[in-house]
Length: 566
Ligand code: BGC
Image 1 (cartoon, rainbow, N blue to C red):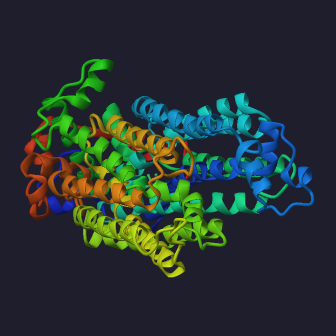
Image 2 (cartoon, rainbow, N blue to C red; image 1 turned 180 degrees about the vertical axis):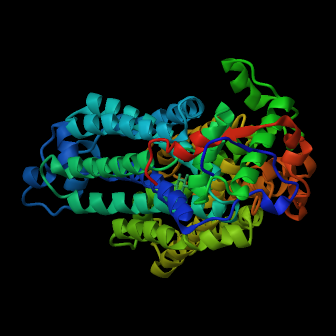
């Protein structure tokens, strides 16, 4: 539309026209953002391995290498094993500190990012997260002792907190409704690849006797930060952010680019109209007047009402807590030690690698399942599946798989337990793994979305940290532990029963709807009936947008590129 002027934003009454058709380029834009998952996985994955590296332990304890101190003894000789257990190991409190300080950083990072994403935008918040992460990474790499490492982990954690929450927000806001679930599942896929990569890099450097042993795994992370920051610098901002800011020209420009459509396309105008009308509606229900008020808004309304902000925030926070309480990270964090305890396993690290591989290979099935079957059934049946798998592992461990002085481990029973643990991972990877992230990106209205996603992500990291801290006290073979052994699977299985009930009663179906339609659905139905709900009117018609004379200046629309290249 040459020559300037303004495009009127009137909206449509046709519910099938509230989202523009999508091009391949638009798919590529959202797929790229999923790359942020690599951070999440890699950063949680490398520390455990590094803590067991001889060079790292020597640096932290100043004790002599076991093979230098006992040159004539076999590494499995009880004297050497005892030396490793008592003197040549990073003290437990230091292990807990360097591991859990990351989660502390991520917890606060996710909450702070919920704020910054509304002030400076989703894209810049992610880029800022990458920069903070690089500062933390530099300290981690430079460190030769506890203090600098702890400071580095805390700062890197802040960065990961920024990235892990706002990537979900950004992807959910720009993805086309038909594939929104699949692309966020792509983020989960990247998390699993990150965990696998961390395991592989640590495996490759663990026997080095120089600083490269831990500096290489730590430094590899700079690559992820640079790729994500540069990529994001080229991508468009979320159009929903610009609508929230009242910058409709920028919103139209960004929407045109994420949909790969010309700006004067009626589709773009109709989709923009719907986002604007929905935001106007939300603001009319709950006006936000102050900074504090905008945080308080997350907890406003009756918890019994599915559409209230209080209910949605609670849903997001509980969703992420439940995901962690499935016990999945018990396997990833504590796997090698647990497999060792089962007896009759010669290489527990290899089994650990197999479990991470099963996680990676199972996840892609979820790309299709979340869109065909839907989020709600996957969460309900996924929880049920994990109850069954984990109870079977617990039952075998308590009977044929028992490994005690009077009942030596039965190799077949051990194999069966590992097989069911792998099946359990597959169920998680196709259900609760991706769906917990998908749902938190979809359930919040624009007015509180960035804070809601931030709080939910912080809940994930909070429980992640709790699991990391308590697990050794549940299963480790030491005096201060409950020594639950494989009975711990009865605990995770029981918690999955709670997840099952939670999903059945509280999680709505959001597949195939725009984020604005999700809002309408929550207003009009209950989680259990949500699958049958169909969009029947548009926000633009209900808010009488056509009468409000909203228009977008065309010159600005056509010339502004937001400084980005895609
Ligand atoms: C969870 C992580 C977990 C990973 C395993 C993610 O969705 O939030 O805590 O380690 O899945 O794939």
